[in-house]
Amino acid sequence: MSGDANLDRQMSFLKEADRLKSVMRATRLADGSRHENSAEHSWHLTLYALTLADHAPSGVRIERVVRMLILHDLVEIDAGDTPIFGTGSATQDADEQAAADRIFGLLPEAQARDFRELWDEFEAAETPDAVFAKSLDRFQPPTLNLANGGGSWTDYSVEEHQVRARIGLQIERGAPTLWGWLSPRIAAFFAR
Amino acid sequence: MSGDANLDRQMSFLKEADRLKSVMRATRLADGSRHENSAEHSWHLTLYALTLADHAPSGVRIERVVRMLILHDLVEIDAGDTPIFGTGSATQDADEQAAADRIFGLLPEAQARDFRELWDEFEAAETPDAVFAKSLDRFQPPTLNLANGGGSWTDYSVEEHQVRARIGLQIERGAPTLWGWLSPRIAAFFAR
Image (cartoon, rainbow over all chains, first blue to last red; front, side, top):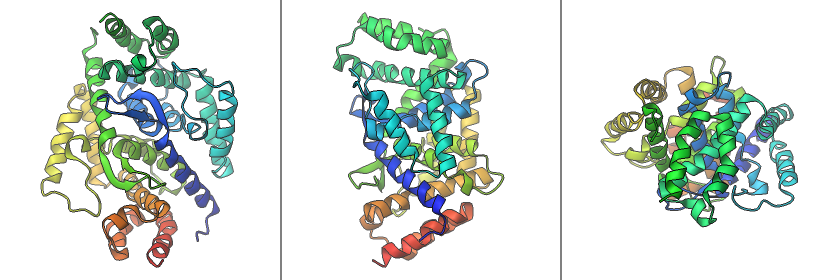
């Protein structure tokens, strides 16, 4: 119906992406009313990036961080969400690579390559932009847990040392002032 | 607990923003399973912006469009979503202005001003960036309606001429090639 084959492929990709709204995460909303899905989580993270840009190390380009965060969870449409305190499947990495092949592969070739490169950069967590993006992805769930009185920490019977081991280093590495805000609040929560 | 009063305000804003995940829209997901909320809608729109950037008129800066789309619905936390085919409340504009005052006002002053200016620019729909952002905001719901077999068109008993009047001009103005894709599909849907 359209003469533009590239646009048809872009529209197929955007329709497939809609399924991210049905991928449920371990984290609950701030009011505790239900679990969060990966699409609204992705939006929330982009807002964290805009709002907390002044806590990014110098050299970080927030518009690239935002792009990464928009794309970062799309693979979960096929591979599912892996809760940070759950036990990941043995094939998780391979599943996510296959998902990236299929989902980004819906796009026109050049754009598929661009999006895939950005997602690969995020996953590798080596560039300053990716390190900051990963820090935000680790920082947001505990802020929701604190807001709703425990959330995934309570559901998974997690202890304070596990929280610090699983997320502390990664947040501190990419966003030290945010870890400085979060760390005493985690201590206070587990001391309650 | 934190010595950084600005960061405390930013964190309050981000917690309040979480409530956008509970604002429900008239539109249903592509699979028709449930209504879409405004947070996941905002994420989907940012992905439309990245994916369809080559359909933006020249001069449009996609990173500004993405910023606008991240922020564009936050006022709905207080003012609610106004379905495009519903009857808006008489106080809608005033409600949204008051919501913007309160919600952006949670942020540190300079940042509150920046975000508010961007939201005002989006609402005014005069700059090229805002016109394109508004076009995407009008373009995404019909693509979901087409995917799920009617959605809000069926729910609101909308006729084709109403769809064209309410969204056609706005999409065509900001993104003519996207309207070229959508228009014959709307025709085919209503001719079914």
